[in-house]
Image 1: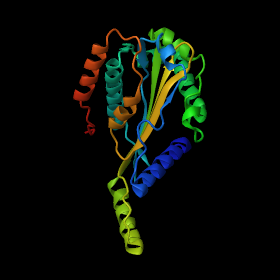
Image 2: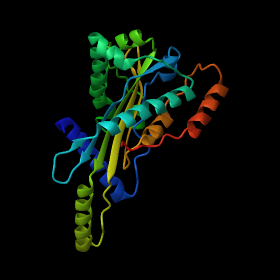
Image 3: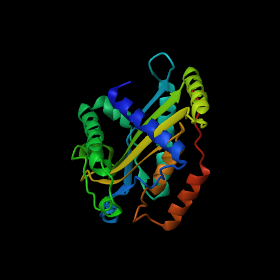
Image 4: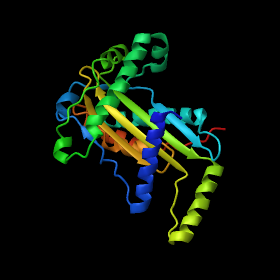
Length: 268
């Protein structure tokens, strides 16, 4: 596991410990950031490209080093795209049908532009989430990932792009047995047995204007589960297309979203 991924996993574990200790969880809208001129910017956005999600899922083993779970990563990746499409269409946006992976493999410049867009969001994330911000401060933040996103937008024909980053953690049987043993020992010593999650996940999404590179909306959430339902919670705060053809279409889409159930499958 890389140092960067390790830091993120440590952050997730700490958050989950805090949730267990305090009995409360971070709400889906706590980390929402929106551009101050969101409605005005949305007037120029009708179509969205869902960039193939960056997904990393690892199994934490008791004695050996952590193990990547590529089969599970592919399942989660496909489900995230499915769920994002449903939510975007429910809010009046057209999802661009574009072979993103093929474009990356055939066009180095396009692949580099996607990487730059992702890295650009990593940088501006420090401004969006780097310190405790008041409600007023959050409402005034303007950040851009840069002009690299222009090429992605032009090649795909999308007005905006949606970036998705998902990290999952799953404990092996041996690792869970160790946690149970430690929990029993702590319980004997303190009279309180801690509850250790066997799974955890972290997801972040960013909605980016394809021309200006402005981050129009972003949200992130950690959870003691390993499925895409966390992503569904995060997207509850996603903005509505301000000039969608009809409100009825959006309402129908919302109903479809609620009726569509995407459950986590286990790889064989």
